[in-house]
Image (tube, rainbow, N blue to C red; front, side, top):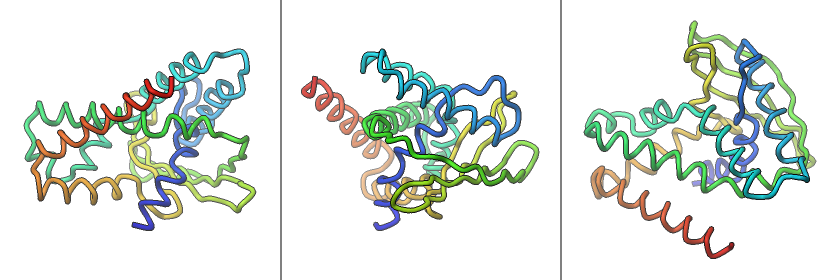
Length: 204
């Protein structure tokens, strides 16, 4: 539970540092670094309306996240047990939950600095990018697992203070599947997305 709370608390920082377009950059760390400028520029642009800013950040997130790979790793062996239709539904709902849950946290950005430490090539198409956030409360290590797709390095997991985002969700969802099955998990996820949309509408 402590690891899960840490991940939730810090995921906001993760989101805006990996959401973005990296067409000019080449290597994993170069692309991660390039994405920061895109999102931070949006966060700092006082001329943008709130909804316009959110729409542009949302677009960048959808371009940068490797949602299918994230979904496969989150469900683990349960991915193979799911039908193709269930796999598609899970991927869509998982993407919406990540986006909707943490959009407000992204907007809490307070101009923290990031230090790029190194990149480690694990294979020709897999790498780890090591960084840390230089916050007033202390440095926060955040490492990114990225996979190469075409000329892009897409994020499929993030390790915040040695806690894997995917591992957290995998553990939580596996318990729900054991109890209610894959359809039960999908129903709960769909309800959570609906609740978040209702809260957004009520907040105006």
